[in-house]
Image (cartoon, rainbow, N blue to C red; front, side, top):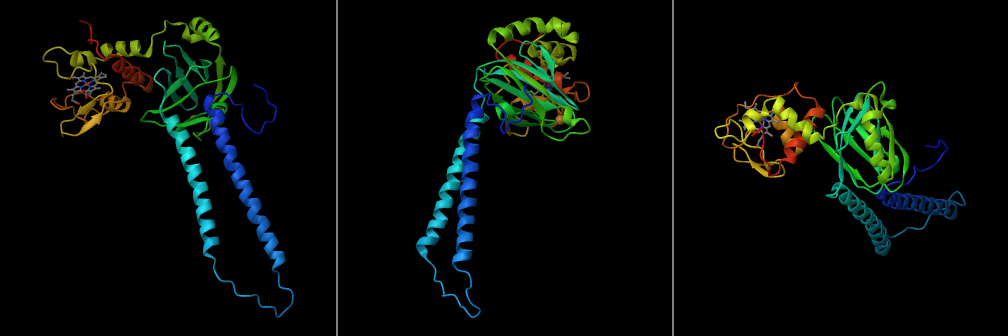
Length: 323
Ligand SMILES: [Cu+2]
């Protein structure tokens, strides 16, 4: 947490080092060509300057070899950078299966974060070192962007949909967390710190978080358990409980499947599909069912939506409800 001047943020995730190598390669490349071309321009300007008033330069005819060289060399260099960057990008697009999932909601002007066991934080994130962490993010209002320079991680956080990012912290310590998308008056204060702890410190922190952090003293529920309660409280269970003759389909095993809709199209039942099914049920009608599901728009906030999604995700093969 030092305030000393530094050119680059600390390197604190496995991805950070790889991004930096690529970054410096591009910087060196740019510097090399600016200097090389600049030097040639200067040299030619002097070497071929007009020496007396009536001087006429010799005519110059093209050179195929020269043209081929200045076409092929930049092309190869550009492609190299393209494939290098694409490789980094694809590695980064898919979080490993053992990643710990943290739910993030942005709101003018704070970050709300929730751990797998239900522990919540505002503007701080405690995580264990060496553990891959996946963020599932959405916004309650406008576009924000979740940015941890030391991890070289930045991803937009959008209202109305889920975005994801992930990282593996490699160093313990405290690192800045920012909102990187101008989002109103107090945008500049929308941030805090990521505290990377040893796994033991993290366990201890989880133990004390429920009593230490003022309002968090209530019993913690995992997002899936909280979602299960909402599922009953909001009456979802009456239509989706899986009973014979229920109005809606059982949601067991729905997540991650291809879902056939009434118009015959197929759609992947991912987080966004479930979110939309709850807020705008008329948008995608499941095949074989009537469009009778009421919209829950305005009755559930983003945190609750994430909890409902977490619950529906969790019921891979279990039975639903109060049976
Ligand atoms: Cu913001």
